[in-house]
Length: 84
Image (cartoon, rainbow, N blue to C red; front, side):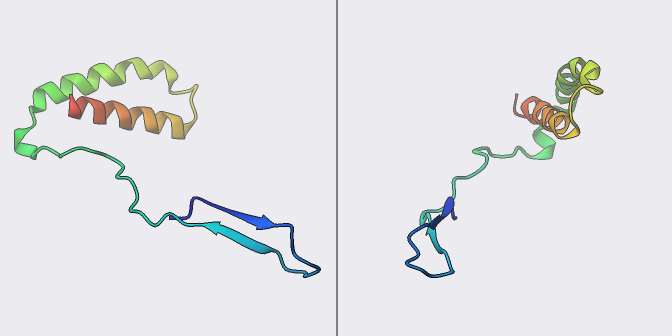
């Protein structure tokens, strides 16, 4: 992974800029530290109630938030209910 790249202003009269690239040699951090439950192990009734309870308060925000923000809130609500 390349966390950053910069240019050097020390080009000694060249018309090309030197790129300075920093490289992480370690593995990237995992995004989630979870183990997904089997579909058969999920209490569907409880999940449905929790998702409904978490999503209902978002209704007034539908016309106020940008689509990306609403998408993130919706996804997080479902994910949190699933993990709960």
